[in-house]
Length: 148
Image (cartoon, rainbow, N blue to C red; front, side):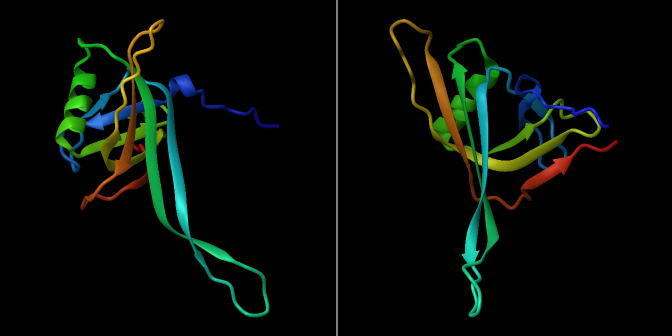
């Protein structure tokens, strides 16, 4: 019997690329709480006579959402907020572990930040939820596995 190996959410990582697409320099975004990577295929109906409704997946859509605690000394957060203000493309990777570790699986795409509400609850610290969506890019998006 095989022992299950679960991946804990706290061990997953978000990275942005401060280098080029061909030669990435991955910078971990550590100020992240409860990240959600939503991957959804559009669907094409392929029904034919003599059968029921049938579908095939077509274009893959992705969206990243997470919340950061506002920290004016966090240089990564400063870079992300500047990217929002300037509508700058960010090469992001959502990984199941350290991106430099052999065997780590990750999803990579070019994104822009589309939403950045600032939550300022009286009895809490300031929090900034961010929503990233894929943007126009010539770079390939998709699923990757780190190999030596």
